[in-house]
Length: 554
Image (cartoon, rainbow, N blue to C red; front, side, top):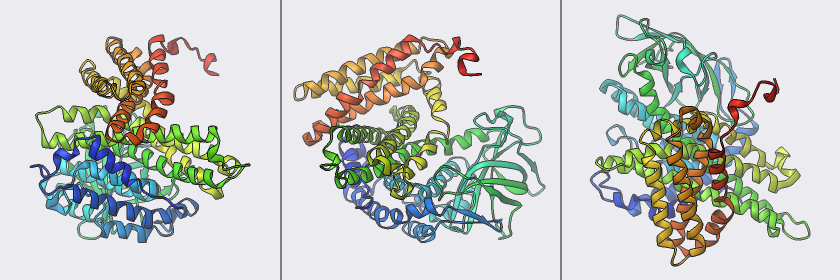
């Protein structure tokens, strides 16, 4: 059995655990209906299963390569990408005025979930283009939108983001790429960028790069960074002064070329205002962070499907899926996968509700959930892929089974688009500047869900209620602490919140469909208790400040 997209689970979550049904026929989405949403999910599942998944393994075995300055992609990728572009799958949620379908962001995330599980390396190209469309839609001039958006939305062109430099990783203050104004209103961009996913390929006519750079009069630090759109081919069709210097050799995600880009006075145009480039780029990055969390979820789905199939076929006296240890690995991973998927789709629908109901707190809700989804989704992806290797036993360590590819591919999701540590700091820093109000509101909703479930399922509801109360108290404690204490507790706080919010989603699922009780019981009985450990670690203090260099092995 090959990969099968989880369209059924996704549709259940959207219909029963999110307010997406409120958007059907709404002023924001007048043409949206249950039938249209169902058709989109069904067709996305089909193309994931039949077009993307079959070339996933080829991407791992036959990596993208650089030949005579040109990037040559893996076997089967060209035909698969063409099918995606011609089918309109590059940007479902993009503006209709430029060729998009104007569908909810949540449906776009649902499609990304299925397509990532089928082929993460190739789908990453779409995800980056979607992020650039979002950035230009919010910050580009009318002329830039009219010129770039139709080409990006159609898939004729693709997009990238260029932030990182050899000397400037997560801290962009040391960025050295320069942009010199030309008389015609353009800029000459010079510098080197690294870790540029899909910086070039033979799949599209042109690549549009969003590049962070400094103007000659730029102030020091991150406040002196501007954003430029720098195409590989200029509007007149001539080649711009940029090239791929090399491709990185990576532990995974081999089908996605990760480029070292060199700009040598390349012609570009400013996006947004001078020295405000980081804010504009963060529009793309925030879009990408939610999508990266969904990448982890999609890969977890694929890894667990493969592991479950192996466990039914592998006989050690009897099929190993009958062994308690194997059922534990599969059950806990499945329970976490459902929780992570529910949180991601709730965040996506919150984005859509923010547009439909600007007076509500939906935008704050979506912003708060984004780092939680990014961290938890990617960690669930890594844990599920690791469990898949373990279930395969020795054959999981042998590359011919393909079980290891999932772990090698998904591992980077905890690193790129802002490491998970940075996401955790964002959560306890910027996202809790409200004194923890949004966190406590979400936890209160879980407690209310537990109260509704208590009459039918007291054994499930009581632990969720108690865990939510413990984490709420931890939030109130944490927001009263200094910044160093917050930083030390940040990753524990993300875990505690994700586990409790995920348990709340399981309770909602059981109330909507009692057949989901067994999986909810696994999450609440075996996964949720980790939240108590995270809370205990927060309150005990990390002891990190007391560590000396010898303690750290130096």
